[in-house]
Image 1: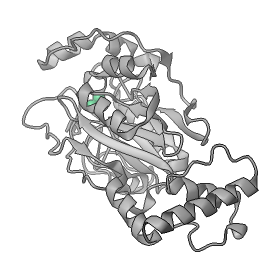
Image 2: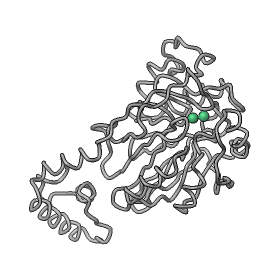
Image 3: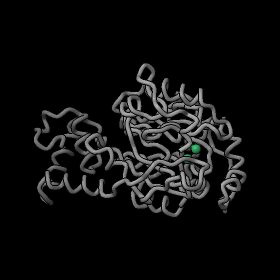
Image 4: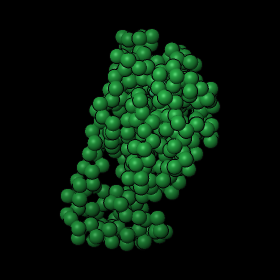
Length: 333
Ligand SMILES: [Zn+2]
Ligand SMILES: [Zn+2]
C-alpha cells in the first residue's frame, strides 16, 4: 500500500494523490503541496480510527474483486452448438487483473445480451467520471450497475456495429445523456440492426436506435476523466468488420479488443465487410505492438494479455514466431 509507512513530508505529490485516491479521499480542492500533505494526515487519522490500515486495504480489495469471471469464448452473429455461452452474467474485470489492477481506476465488466457481450465500465475512482464500452443488451442491468457504482458516464464507445454490441445503446444513452461514438465505416451495419436481428432470429430493440453522436478515428484520444488525466486511444483495427476499433488505456495498461482479438482466437471474417488480410494486419501491427503486459478485455469471453496472444494465439501470432496451427477460415468459433 502506498503511503501508510511513509512520512508525509517525504512523499511526492504523485504519491500523496495516489494514497488519497486509493483510500477514497478527495483531493480535488488541494492547490498547494502543503494542503495535500494535510489531507493525507487527516485521511490517515480517520482510517486508523476506524480499523487497522492493512485490514482496511484487504477489505477494499476483496469487495472490488468479489465476482469471478467464468466465461468462454463466443462470437457475433452466431447461434447454435458451436457458440459457447458465458456461464456467468456478471464478472469483475478487476479480479482477473490481480496485482496489475491500476490504482485509482474502477473497472467493471458485465456479460450482457443474447450473445453475452462483455460490457465494460472504466472510470476514475475519485472523480467518478467514466466511459462505457459496448452496451450489448440488458439495459436494466447496465443502468443498475452505473447507479450502484455512482459513476457518471461521459461517453459510450462501441467497438463495432454487430448487433450484440449495441442492443441497449439507446436506453443507456437516454438514461446517461452520454455521447455515443462509433467508427463511420461500421455505420451501414449500425443502420441495418433490424436485418442483423432478423438474420439471427432475435427480437429487434423496442426503442429505435438513433445514429451515433460522434465518429471514432484511428489515433484519436478520448477523455475518460479530464481531472485525473485518464484517457484512452482509439486503435482502428478493421478485419472483423470495416469499422472495428480497440480502445487502449495506457495509464491502466489495458486494451479493449472487441471482436478483433480473443483469448486464444480472433474474430471471424466471413460476415459483411469482414477481411482476413486486414484482420491479420490489424492484430500483428497494431495490437501486438502494444506493451506485452497490456491486459486485454475482449468483446466476449475471458481476458488475456498481449504477450500471451502474440506467442500462443491459435490463429494469429506475432510476426516471426512459429506459425499458428489453426487457419483463419476455421476461426469462426
Ligand atoms: Zn460480438
Ligand atoms: Zn462482432
